[in-house]
Length: 187
Image 1 (spheres, rainbow, N blue to C red):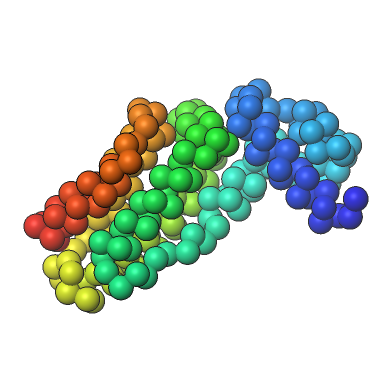
Image 2 (image 1 turned 60 degrees about the horizontal axis):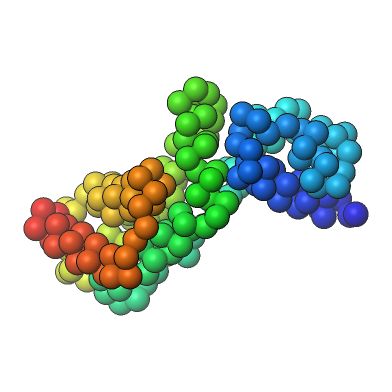
């Protein structure tokens, strides 16, 4: 295997192990076995499990999600909600996210890494999505992007990642209408 291929194999193995056994039971040995490499290949890249997992999770969490510009806030919001709900329902993400959130309560390094990644993503979503809607006159001037993003993503995260409730076929449509009305009313 080429050097880049080994790193990809290790990253894939880490994500699969996190989904199957969680951070607490994840081991360098299991990752190496799953990736088809020796432990030394891992230790050449990372000095320990925490460093390995945090770098890989940061890379995944900080990936730029293409932010929609459909020409309307309702269209942008609808598309964003579809993207986020699909991601939260993904088999691996639905296992990894709750596990890492629980670990974050016990480990300040994990908490800080996750908060930084989420903050960066939320800020980008708020600036673009809400900024576009305000510029088009669809939301009031002064609409707080941080509050808007919390209102948009918080309930969806709660429903899919915490409560683990399925969403009905028309849920995202109803949610889009409700969020749009709330933001228009309150800014």
